Amino acid sequence: MPSFRLPRAARSLPLARRWRSAVVVCAFLAAAGVGVGVALRLSPAGAEELAEGGLAGQPPASSVPPSSAVPSSAVPRSPAAPVLALPGPVPAHGRGSFGYDDRAGGVLGRAGVVRRFRVAVENGSGEQAGAFGDAVQRALAGPGSWVDGGRLRLQRVAPGGRYDFTIYLATRDTAARLCGTGGIDIRKGGVPYTSCRVPGKVVINLDRWRTSVPHLVAARMPLDAYRLYVVNHEVGHQLGHHHEGCPGAGRPAPVMQQQTLFLDGCRPNPWPYLAGKRYAGPSL
Image 1 (cartoon, helix red, strand yellow):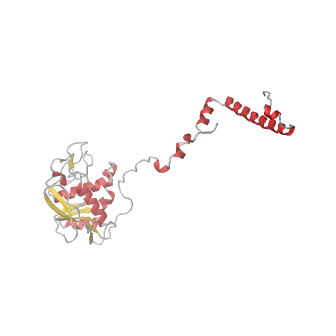
Image 2 (cartoon, rainbow, N blue to C red):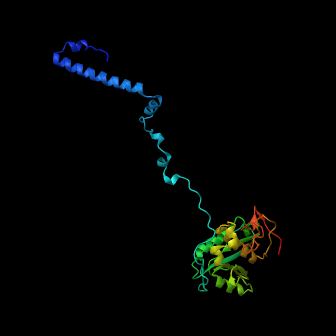
Image 3 (cartoon, helix red, strand yellow):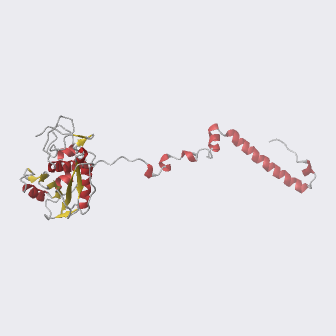
């Protein structure tokens, strides 16, 4: 340690006060020497850490691991897989009576004749008329629906209003009865299977509404897309369109193809209009 001398003013003080001054000066020099030694022993990295406000051996505040710095709500999550079919049993029959969506909807389409329809759900089916009405509205609004041609408009009306046809959601037994009155057999393997249209009635089979069909589930067609298809297909019959075939392997299936029964090499498609143009297959 370097030698030192008391300042001249301190040497003129009494002996006791000189000793106190010497102790203070020694303590100051000792502390300064320690500080210099630390500064000399720090590596450049350590000096950078201190300059950033951290301590040697500990990360600075900006180095906190992302897992603890980012709230869990901000971490991206994988999108949920699409629902292909709903689980659980489907009622085979209901009460045979219907509840109606009591809301009038806006006019769908930009030009053409207006066709008005009601929406009804069988009581005891476990489905709600409002939810079914919303799904029908999405299907018929498009883009891609029948109103895209510019020659037709559609409007949902409340009960008591003038209407041209009714769209029913019915259990399979009731659907078979409604379709049978128009001479249409919807059975497959002895069980009411498909949906149908008879004059003034578009009948959607609850079994298909809830579970789609095995080959479309295997093709990964979301249940929501199947619902768009089955509404547009059966309403297409009400509008005067007939069944069509697959126009070629790998191409989209026409909406008037019986996709509930087969694809014939086509890909599932719920819309009668694609890219703004009517999409059709060969007449059957």
